[in-house]
Length: 505
Image 1 (cartoon, rainbow, N blue to C red):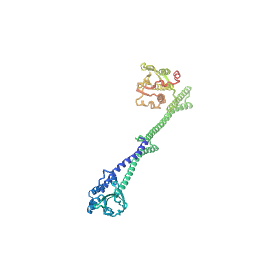
Image 2 (image 1 turned 60 degrees about the horizontal axis):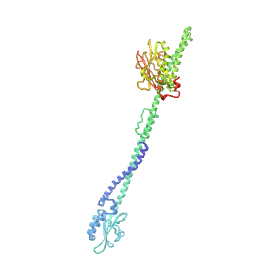
Image 3 (image 1 turned 90 degrees about the vertical axis):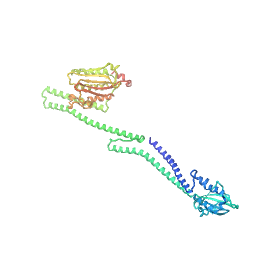
């Protein structure tokens, strides 16, 4: 849930929950106060509103009224009135009997109050009406029942109910309810605010801790955030940034290690021919080469060492351009069969002098028709040349054989597989995974006479990767080595405006 939706829900809950809880609290609190009123007035009003008791239909008056209508004569008897007053006193009520304009009986409830002047006249009684009196600041409910004595005298009976407890209970009820509502609102808002802020502040605290870790250079941690809101998205983005930053630093450190290794290897590989050149030059200068034949041999050696240095520098420049992806590639559709035949024809003469045969093999059944491949001719020629040169250096056989086998890749139909197989001395199993690393040589002596610069297969790997293929090797000691690589077939999607021109070049 997003933070916006969470805040909307929280704001809505801040209104709805207090209202619902306040209504429930009001019901329970009102029941408690009604119970106290019932207990204080000794009546049952649970089944009717409190206003019915106070305003419309007082039960006390109904009781007195019904009784008095049947036995009006008893209203003149003092003992009867005393017993009735005692019964009414249990209900916080009392009576006042007036004969003509004289007070005949007055309950203890109102004995101390000057109430005579506030009483309505005879004949003013209406059953549906009542009168409220304030006596010394306390509310009283007054009901009047008019009647005639046996001698014809006008009489009035007044029922007086003390409402001070009801008023006090009402005020207490309102205050209690307001306090409960205030507590409910405070607790609800506090809990909801704490919950929402907790869901927002916790991830922010994790982000703060993460920034401190990054500031101190520590990237070996993980931001654990499971929320799916905007803060969670920020946490995931921050974690991605941390991960990529760590990866970038590791790559940078690896580049630094590679650079140091490269400098070490370059220094070693350049120092050897430079030392040799220096030695031969000093030999000429010191007169060690004291004959024209010897001087010619020294100069030829110096020339060969200079060529080795030049070749090494060229390969270093080529590898560095491949490594930083600054070497342009010009891809086109290439007839792979014709391309390989041209390369074999170019190498054939030099290899025959070394008693090595180079042949191309492919099974006609592998291809319905010989496919075109998407390749840079010059770069692909460099790959095959490096692999063949490497095979020649490690041949060490009286009769050498190098075969180039062309076939479909077993895994996918969109590529073809090229295998360059020789019958040389093979590569030990423990060295095989590293033969495509730069400056790696199986010969630990790093003898450039046989081992070369150590960049040939590394350059081949980079070029094949730029072609979108992969390269690997298999070998058996004393039986030979096979170098495999894959190339993508040329499709209609690769056809550009200059395709026909490139194909005919």
